Amino acid sequence: MIRQRLILICFIFAFIIVVTRLFYWQIVRGVELSEAASDQYYFKLSLTPTRGEILSADKSPLVSNKAAYQAYAEPKKITNQKDFAEKITELLNLDTEIIEERISAENIVWAPLAHKIDEEMKLQLETLAIPGLGFEKESKRYYPEASMAAQLLGFVGSDENGNDTGYFGLEGFYDQALKGKPGSLILEKDARGLPILLGTNKRITAENGQNLELYLDRAVQFIVETKLKNAIERYGAKEGLVVVMDPKTGGILASASFPAYDPIKFSEFDKATYLNPLVSATYEPGSTFKTLIMSAGLNEKVVEPKTTFKEEGPVKVSEYLIRTWNNEYHGEMTMIQVLERSSNPGMVFVGQQLGKDKLYDYLEKFGIGEKTGIDIEGEAIAQIRPKSEWREIELATASFGQGIAVTPIQMVRAVAALANKGDLMEPQVVKKLIDPRGKTIDRQPKKVRQVISPATARVITEMMVNAVDQGEAKWAKPPGYRIAGKTGTAQIPVAGHYDAEKTIASFVGFAPADDPKFVMLTLLREPSTSPWGSETAAPLFFAIAKELFNYYGISPP
Image (cartoon, rainbow, N blue to C red; front, side, top):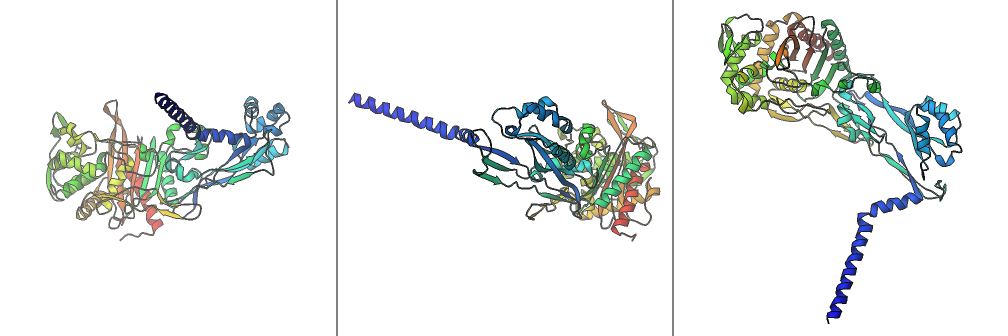
């Protein structure tokens, strides 16, 4: 009886060992062994899909593709490897040693040599009539509008395996959609590793990438880029940025920043230019921020347009003195005049009426301190200091746009809510995705939340119109139009203190005020002719606005 049990246990143990080994070979290493077996009888050639195009709002290509070729070698057909390498090394700009290494590896029937060679290069190589040299059609990026909107679009480079990969901007964000799915050509081979012409072969067609259709308007983009370049030169600024958005949809109609780069020659440019400052740069917004704080005060009814404040001198907050931008004081003023004259003490009053809790809540409602969700790779986040760490001075400085940082896209989106009856929208660059079969996926405008009431939006709009009509920059405004806006001049923090000589000049606004077609932010870093937004960024805003009025056929009311 005991002997029978021992035999049974041995059988069970042996059975478990057999099952375990079968599991290991068939399941754990099944795919690996199957591929190894397949490699003995077949070789696989990858087929590259055509990358999707990027189209402007009128469906004109901003980024397209043109014919190119991959050069490859078939070592089994090469009679003299050294001679082969020496003949093609100069044309392909590859070292002879590298070519010899690729074609001398054991058990290979196909070795890639170079990607993206153009038609002219292919013809030169073909005239050499070198046995074992072949070509596979592929494509490479082409830019019909040259470097237009380069930082918004991004560029295509290669990953560690030499495959096309999108970097930065839309190319990076939508890389998976744009690149498509590669195909393959599987051919049966003989014992020498050569293809059997009448053997089994299978071709899996590559699936091309999806096209992107943008909100971006080529004409608006051209206007913005031209005016921005002129302004940077005229005002001696180090950098500049302009973004134009549709406040009703959140669609980006144009975005430009300089310095920039040429996407077809991106490797020749400083890598710092690859980042799009629209989403990656942070700055203190200065007086443009007053529009948001004032609208919060109006919405909470802690102030009204005709609420008065006595501007009699610097306001003391803790051990600090808050002064006006020009050290001039105007006595009793309404909130309308506080915004018009850009009074820092007046805005401290508004901030104090709101209080820390409410002001902080409105910052969060306006999306300050959070990512906007825009569909561009590389969006940064300028976090707000935790509310528990706010002192009286943080409340005061935040009320006039200092001591707090934003990205340009955060700022323009927040002001767009004022133009959009208080509704905060998610900014979007891509309007539609279109697959190779023509199927369209619409990206619907997305409302994030309502920040202020429509009534408050109407009131702050009128106050901003007055700030334009009566403010320091009124001389540059196109006559007859109702434009809502606000200038900003912020000192740049350097090593823990503000540099008195360096400023960021900006202007943000929307027009026509009664039914906004666009909201726009203009920003110039360190203008040398004048540090003030009213003398640099505001004229740039109005110069672009004038062209947009003509383009959209908008006449003065």
